[in-house]
Image 1 (spheres, one colour):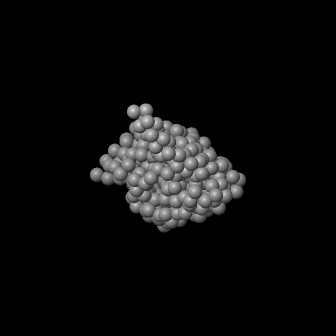
Image 2: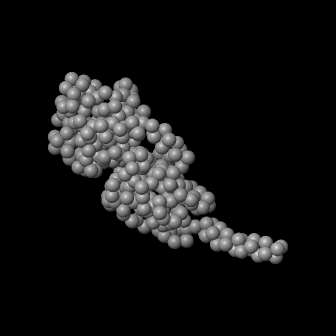
Image 3: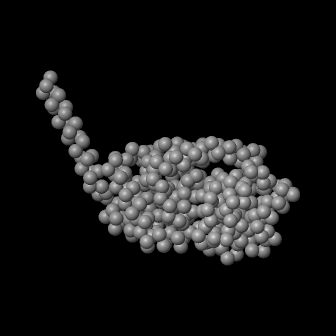
Length: 317
């Protein structure tokens, strides 16, 4: 009996050794980054800026695979099924991932993943074109209330961050028509072409056409350092707070050593002055939040997200 116990213990020890050694030497081969969107979008750009730094930090190249579909839900659903070995990561956004769980558009729960952190934020602005008669948010809201459902507000996504911001406006009693576009470039073109009256737009998507738009407000609790004259919705009495948080996630169950190595390395990369400058040029602000903070963000948003989804369903009927 004692012999068999020792044999079993020896076998268990041998099984554990390769895993421990593998974790200590991680990474031993290139790491894949899944982008669940088409190339060239914000989720792609915020990772592409660190390609060179990633190899310097981890000693292995970062390769990219694209799995677009359903605002990222297709790729993230696949990520859930992959091995939790640290060799496939994914770029996705807050609040998209929890909205997809609640709406059922993604075959996953937010608890199906390990979160390596939120590495950047893309703020949302409320904008009109330069030729618009509206000079302030107050003017726009007054006109919307005077003639309900005559003014339109476009969003750069459906059930994403800008759509949530527009639904928040509607929930607070501003009777506007919400027009959803598939992507920032199309939404900006719709605004500049006069198809819509206003636009909820992430800063990165607005960057190229910023000179042709008038920013009336930011969906944040503080003003933007680059546009200090643009007020927040909150200071105007409308608590509309929403942003696009750029997340890096992995299949749930990463070995602790691998997870710690990734979190430490990624945070170091995004703190590099050169990376900070490149991200800022692309419209992203570095704002790191660890995995526990990301999970609290999901928990805090969940009740309001359900209300906004119900409102969206009502407006579509």
